Length: 265
Image (cartoon, rainbow, N blue to C red):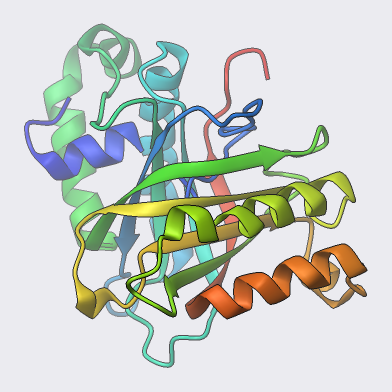
């Protein structure tokens, strides 16, 4: 594992928020506590996502080894498609979902199976290309509050992820009780096949009032057409409760582009 923290993030790379890669967070109730590391990348001038794919695909192989060893739940790359932010500050995110607050990468033995006797040279080259192609501009760590997925969920069939970055309208309110309607709405949407998965996570680090948000709610789906479907009376009522309690600071739409798979999936 790379001796720098940033490398650790790449190796172990939830969201969402808590986002899945081949059912990364498909958990039975109550949701087991997991941690998601969001690594935000900005493409270097003149480069495109196509330039970043070879680098991220190489990371995927390394991270798949960590998943196979049980060191992490999953890793995935999500490319930003749309954002309410008028000043784009990043182009895509790589996401680690971990069972612990900390990053555990693949073992030296596992990496040696990938690179043979040229581990140091190959890893140094990968890091260099990584920094030159799409430098990391920020990182966030989120703790899962709730997540549920339908039986038919998979990143290839449900590649679209809609993420709401939210905050309490009343900063003094107890968010733990107010988040209940979000959990209920997620369950209803999955049960009624309005979405293939949904969840909510809270920001662990770094915190700060200038961030403007401390809660993420996400939905996975085949395409955004589902958002135009008429809502049921149950979902409308729950959404109204959520709107009264939370303000959506930013909404972004991502697409699963690369991801690891859980063993046996």
